[in-house]
Image: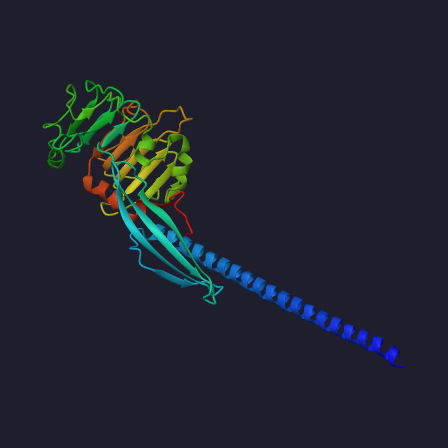
Length: 373
């Protein structure tokens, strides 16, 4: 009996030890698996919080870019808001004025911090925005014509007293020769224009071309649209899309008009109609159409007659009965072939308003400036 019982007890002990070892192994595996799952859960939660925080930071960045479009003078004060997901963002900005050859642009460095609803996920991103004027190069001459000015009609141009340098007046700028032996064109100073003595005390007149007319200039820009607005003529749809108003006529324009206005086709301004003002000027671009301003009509700002690169038809500018532009008249095609009439008065205050007015400011994201570190 004893010899049979001893091996049986030994086998039982081995089985017991094996079971205990298996239980220990199973417990260890279970604990390890649980630990891995907890770690995975933490990683997943962190990833989720990061994505929520990142989305909130991006939303804040887009919000402030939109704010800059509406309020270009925003001083960079913190903008804080909640999203529908209960995530939050805080965006601030630092402004820097960057001088250019002809103007000054503003660079705004934006910092956006997004936070997940539980506050455990915080993401900070940065990007720079550029505030610039649609008018890249403020003109120095009240009448600018590409392709030549045929002086067959009548015109009176009031010069920029410092357009050619301090104390050097500038009235007309063109890439072709101006023949003052035809028509009855006159240029003069602002005082003479205001007192009605332009014809008797002129800088240039029929039979005499003064130094205030810079013609046949080899330095004249080959692309007038690009010179004025930094948009090549071939890419004119880009500038059209950037306009505040896109119209088929000038019928609805008046004193309350402001900003960049694009008109497709002919533009006729009724008598005594005032477009824009000193405080709220306009840039009126008329494409592939004749421009007629009837008696007493005035435009405060810049009038640009634009002929598309694929168009060959001639177009004319005609200002009748004392109608005039206070600012600048520009054309990227020859004018004067139909004895048109031009009356342009250089107004530095109007051009200064265009440079400073929020209606002419645009916002662009600076490529390569975005970062999340």
